[in-house]
Image 1 (tube, rainbow, N blue to C red):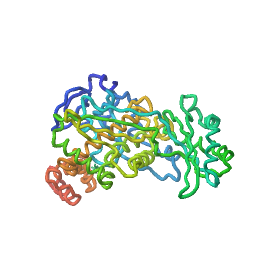
Image 2 (image 1 turned 90 degrees about the vertical axis):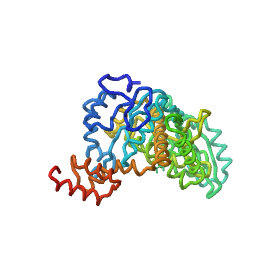
Image 3 (image 1 turned 90 degrees about the horizontal axis):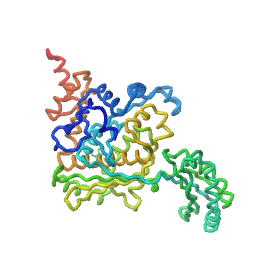
Image 4 (image 1 turned 30 degrees about the vertical axis):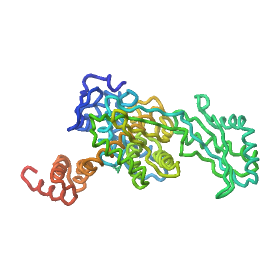
Amino acid sequence: MHRTTCSSTIEYSNSGFEGEVPLKGGGILSGFYRKGVDERIEILKEISGLGEEDIRRLKEGLTIETANVMVENVVGMFQLPLGIATNLKVNDRDYLVPMATEEASVVAAASHAAKLALPEGFKASSTRPVVRGQVQVIGLDDLEASSLRILAAREGLIREANQFAGSLPNMGGGVIDLKVKTFERPRRMLVAEFYIDCRDAMGANAVNTVVEGIAPRIEDLTGGRSLLRILSNLTTERMARSSVVYRRDVIGDEIIEGIIAAYDFAIADPYRAATHNKGIMNGITAATIATGNDSRAVEAGAHAYAALSGRYLPLSKWRRDNKENLVGELELPLALGTVGGATRVHPVAQTALKILGVSGAGELAEVVCSVGLAQNFAALRALVSEGIQKGHMRLHSKNVAIMAGAVGGEIDRVARIMVAEGNVRASRAKEILDEIRGSPSG
Ligand code: MEV
């Protein structure tokens, strides 16, 4: 609970967003969005205990030297804004969530939806962090006999595979199971699947090392040739779940009815389900990137899971409870790490993890899953009421002002005028800018 028990110099209230129903129950960071960047960083210093090094990382970002060892042929940096979603409470603990995204309104929407869920917030859980690694074996005549040979050697193979699992077995993880499956079509093949508890790592390196290491033993046993030796990103053993109740007296019947009808649309039509899930991934991907995790792996797993029944479905579910409140649930495979990979190499990811203050990969997955659910709620709520363009354009108006050449105080001025006129366009921004610059006070 380090967020709510922190220094009294930080103001907490119920008024982070204008025009909302006031909620009881503390933990809301008041008007974070209205502060300047330096003020926000000062607040983070107190709440999350950021030191000078963290602040330098936030301001400086990734250096070219570090970038040059992360990938090949580096020529520069592609940066994304890092925002902080506020008000998120998961399992009775308050979190500030770093989100890296290029899309206006994602951070504000997550914060708003998280706030409307207070004081209870989100209830989340995660499974053991098990990821499967697959060894594809081809050139076999008798799939059944090969399967039986592998299964007969199962215990020994798990022991041997653990020799490639680095420190995981000593940390309570490592290879815990081995299964075999076979396919006749589109070609005859056997797949040996090693189940590996990756502890706090995302696990791609660990899993790939294990399957590459153990594959020759599978070849010896079967007489076949191992071809692919790689993890599966559809981590159905490594799941995160989150649920939330939005009270009827807070959000109103019309919104509840609308969200359930929107959910029905997503069940009925994969074209809508894709966009519904994109709204969820707006939150999940932004937090995944901010923490230095592999967003492509998470996206691949999420969408494959959405289609696992043979039909592409919404990842979340929305219904009424017996008190007519709105209940949301989200479940998806979520392989996120707090150690290893870019989480430790990228300087901003390290600070992001510090801001989150999670104890390990399970807690990170629970928080990120809750962000996804909050994001989904925010999108549906906007879609079934005023539509998303109004809020989106309000936030996007500053981008448009900058694109038209506005600088410093001009940005807010131009943006405000465009929003008031309901005309957020580059051509109008240019006109306003010319007017401002031409005017005596401009
Ligand atoms: C936009 O980034 C996300 C939405 O399209 C999601 C949705 O339609 O549910 C608003």
